[in-house]
Image (cartoon, rainbow, N blue to C red):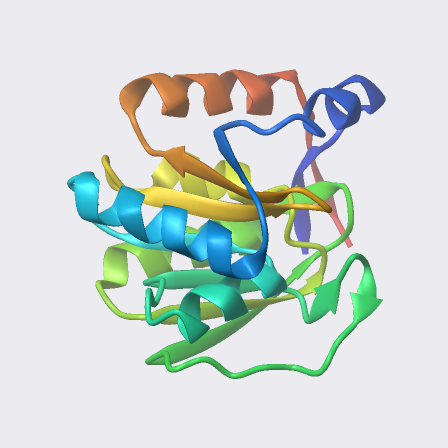
Length: 177
């Protein structure tokens, strides 16, 4: 496994704030508001990062083309869930890092045109950045904001540039394990 990025303590604090539009509310409220956004926008694909938001999207029949999960909710193990996807890919991505393996899996999943689920051994949170960076323009990346709701990030050139700056600020190195 090759680690490409590691989060710094400064970025950890910064990334607690949503990088997109925060939609507050219950499961029913957030899914309705998200559905309205999908109808209004010219969305190319939906990408979900996180177990709860992925489950809620599938339950609401707004199936993400790519779902990235780690079988945990608030860092506690939960019952694994297999979504209605064409392929399931397993990657290692330790907490606080982004591995080359995870980056490659996201890029390949997005270019495949198929419904893919990536199951992470470790933590998936930071993979939101990679999903935004490589998502086709006008895609929506959705992730959970604990105790508040969901965050919707539209993949625009501006948002991709913002994410690229965040990645530049991370400690970058290549370390084989």
